[in-house]
Length: 555
Image 1: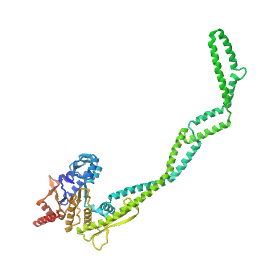
Image 2: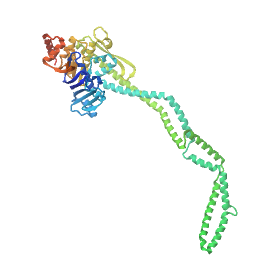
Image 3: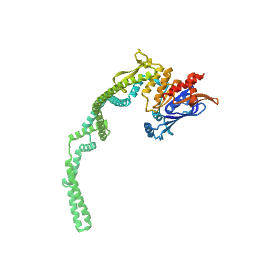
Image 4: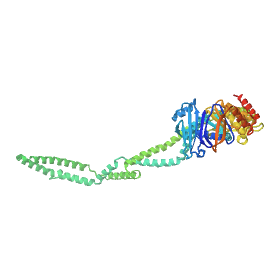
C-alpha cells in the first residue's frame, strides 16, 4: 500500500508531501491543477521514463519519493531479499531526475537500476489511466484478460514453455534439412580422405626405417664386395693378415721369454689378434647377410612414394597425417550421427506435438468455460452500471496449427442495446461504455496480488446516475485493495474514504501545485464546486451534503 508520496521540483510542483490511507482515496481539482502530474510522478516511482523536461524551471534536480507498506507481501519480500534490500515492513523508493540527464534510482536506500525497479513495481501498483480502457479495443489483449479472469495464466505458461520446446526441436530439424546437401558433400570428401589414409596405413617412424633400408639395398653389391674382401684379407686368403700376425706374435713371445720388458708388447699383440679375429668373423657374417634384392628395393621405392604423396596431401609429417585422420573420423562420426540425431529429433517432435495438442485442447476447453463465466459476470456488473441490455460475447477462432499462446485467438464482442448483434468493441463501444466495461472487468477480477490500484479518470464519458454506480463499484474494489482515483464527478467523489483536493496557486510570482486532504465542511465545499462550478449556493452545498450522506450509507 502507498502510504507517502514526496515530490520536489517536479514540473510545477515545488514541494509536496501527501500521506495516503487504506480504502478509497479520491483526488479532485480544477482542470490543469496538476492531478495528472501527480500520476506522472507515481509512474516514475514505478519505473517510467524520465526526462530533463520534468525538472522544475530554475532547478537542477527533481526528486520523487514513495513509501510503501509491504507487510504481508511475501512474494515482494522474497524479491527484495534476493537483491539484498532489507526492509522492516516498509519500502522506500526514490527517483532523482537531473537536468544534465544523470538520473538515479534508489530502492530501500541503496542505489539500484531502472530494470530492477520496473520488476518490483509490478508487485506494488497498477495504474489504469484515462486511456487504459483503450486496451479493450485491441483484440490481442483479450486473450490475456480472459486467461487472467479464468486463473489460466499458470496453464498458459506451461503450454507456452512446452510449445517453446516443440518449436526449438522443429527449428533444429529445419536446420538439419537445410544443411543436408552440404553435409552430404562433406561426408563424401571426408570418407574419401579417411579411406585413402587408411589404405596407405602410415606408421610413425616407418619412413625413416625405409630410407635406411633403401640405402642398404641400393649399395648392396658394394657392401658385399668390401666386406668379403676385408674378410679374405684378414683371414680367408693365403697369406692372410691374421696368419702373418700370428707369426709376429710367436716371435715377440720368444723375445719376451728372454727379456721380460717385452712382455707388455706380447700381450698387446695377443689382444689385437683376438680383436682382429672378431672383426674377421663379423665381416664374414655381414657379407653373408647382405642381399642383392632388386624386388625389395622396388617395393621400398613404391612404399616411400606412397608415403610422400600422403604427406604432401595431409602432412607434412606422418604423425600429422595420422592426427588429421583422427580429426576427420571424429567429424565423420558427428556428420553421420546427424541421421541418428534426425531420427531422435523426429521422435521428440512427435512426442512434443502430441503434448502440445493435449495441453492446447485442455487450455481451449478451460478458456471456453471461463468465457461463459466471464460473460455472465460481466453482464451482471454492466446491469449494475446502468447497462441492463448489454451483451458480451467471447468469440473463438481456431488456428490451423498450434501457436505460442494457444490454439485459438479470441475477441470480445459487445452489444449495448437490445436487438443489436454483438460486434467488435472497436466498432461499437463509446468512451463511456469502454470505461464501464473496464471497471466491470476490474470488479469481477481485480488484481488481488497488487495492493494499490490507481484509476486516472476512469469515469470519462459517463454522467448522471451511472456515475454513482461507478463510484459504488470503486468503493467495492477498495474494500480489498487501496484505490486512488482521479475524478471530475461529484457522484464518484462522494464515495471517498479520504478526499484530496489538488489546486494550482501562485506563490512568489510562480505557479505551484498544492494537494491536501479535505474533510467536513471543506470537503462539502469541494463537492459543491464539482456540482455547481464557479457559483456555489446554499442549495448546492446542501446537495453536496446529501450526496456525501447518501454515499456514506454504503460504508
